[in-house]
Image (cartoon, rainbow, N blue to C red; front, side, top):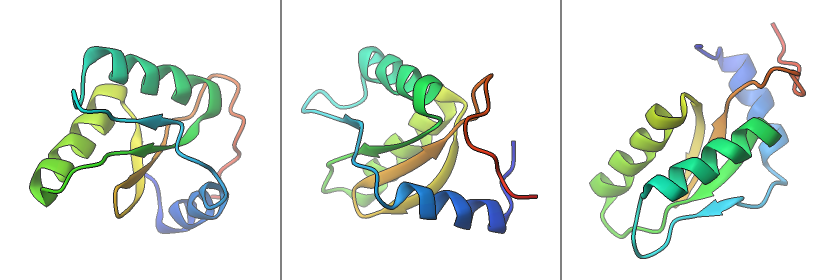
Amino acid sequence: MKLSTKQKQYLKGLAHSLKPVVQLGANGLTEGVVAEIDLALGHHELIKVKVPSDDREEKALIMDAIARETSAEKVQVIGHTLVLFRPSEERKIQLPK
């Protein structure tokens, strides 16, 4: 699913007030963390994930892996925070056309 610029702007507005739901620890990206992110996406559709890493390339690779593993769309990256969106069966968030 590809998001248009208008849809991304809409989701950024919704995500602004959210707190990170999942935070990566010292072990980095583990199967348990991916499962937790997947579960949170299924429940909320739009979540923030905190990826604390000093290395920019490593952080970018981790964020890409999270999006790929969860089949979610990267909406925005601000510092160490990644905003992800994946529509659920109920479609809680109605995207603009």
